[in-house]
Length: 388
Image 1: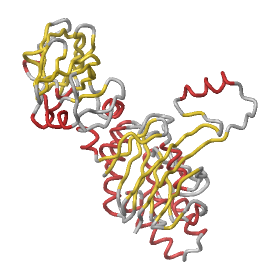
Image 2: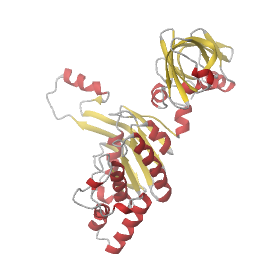
Image 3: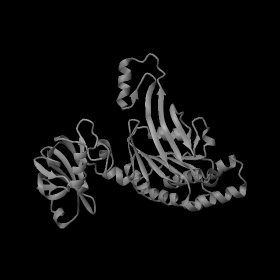
């Protein structure tokens, strides 16, 4: 069993400059992390239960606190407040080597003077594992990761993807309860990243361990995670499956962060109400909401108001509806990205490549609409979803 539980975890980096001026503190707050008298708060009241053998991804922009959270789980950062449990045991003051975890770093961290075999075997040698057992474990891990042919080479003779496989192999030979991965694919090119994502999915199926994975790449998060934890400025914004966070974002940030291209937002949409039925008016075009949406809004007592409406590019349907003009069309293989102008607002539509879409030229007039079931609505002030 390898359940991980974080209860009220908080990380504050102390401010060592005792005579810091107020203006300096204000300038530091521009990094979007809360600055207090105690210091800079990097992670705020983090609560998360991770099940045995679950693959959880922490995702968010740079500086949101995801790597700091991972390092606290690893024991590389001290926990300022809160409690960390692994298999029901409190780990706050347990040394990293005694937590039965392994970590894969962004920069591989391989010993350059050792062969691949020696790199993978090193931690086992420190634990005084028998030589034949070490050989067996290293060879098994190498076979899983398809690096058997490189066991006698040194890291400098390997490509970036091969080095990352070695780093992962070094971690899994220990058979840890929890495998931590801190942006392990960020140094690889796009093709290698795609390959390594597939390798990690295969690896997850072959070893019995709990994965906690950190990335700023939402594509990695969506393809790898059983659940995704979306973070911003040290706070958890939403926890859910890839489908939940894509189709039912809690707030404007999650809606904009998850999905490529980014969701289109209409900041002055009007929510109209007649009895218990609602319509949304965007650029003069009215769309009646579904029964399910009407019920949610009515049960929550939502009145007519100005809202932020969101529609994903894949849900924009060319045809009748809102009048617009094509600014730029991008051919992306089997689909086309249309950047269209609606009264000064840039809207992106993703449409399949057909004979009709192929003749769309920059500057041409176009109309579009969308299915109301794909519409997201957010409060103008709180930016929270009105439909969750």
